[in-house]
Image (cartoon, rainbow, N blue to C red; front, side):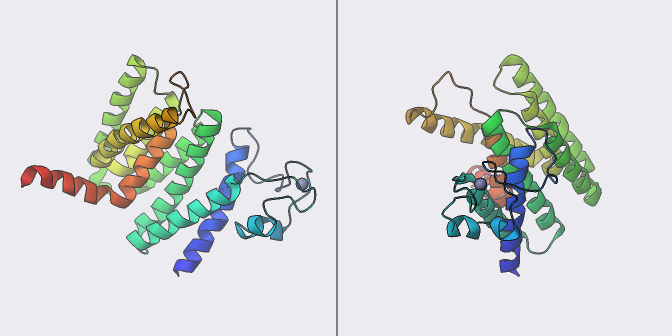
Length: 246
Ligand SMILES: [Zn+2]
């Protein structure tokens, strides 16, 4: 069962690579079929076997020998590992399915934001649709979700207004996540997106990958904070509360 989840994660990861390259360019993610970006040769089924093909061909096109980005196998592998972690944490449940779909969108959002400094609306809308499904599923928590959305929307709009660190895409992403995670979750994600953002930016600047003047996309930090909440949110919040209770 877990092996099947992993393989499924690899296959979806392979499709995410297509999305990461095509959505920002405004090209359909289903047609034309995948081809080598260098020689244009149509890829056959065996050329698209996730990770395995990359290793077998040493990351080169079988037809023209052009080298492929290591991003392809990394995204496939990462997506599969995340699916596996979700299956282990949540079993076979509504939330396992929701989180699998969500993490794939979060991976896509992160990569596109890193490459193009934008979060396409279509992805935020898709995450909001997941949010609506969650709200319909847990309709007793509807006020929790609605307050979550309101809190985050006001907070981030103010922040965007006062500073220029936050883009419209980030605010939309946080709002969509508020629909999924409710008040507690979205406060957690907000706090940790800033903590992770500060740590990662400090490391990038220390290693001179980025300078103080560079704009660093914020979307990936939001996504990482959401992943942290999915896997360790309850534990982190509980140990934080315990600090004050005992
Ligand atoms: Zn080629």
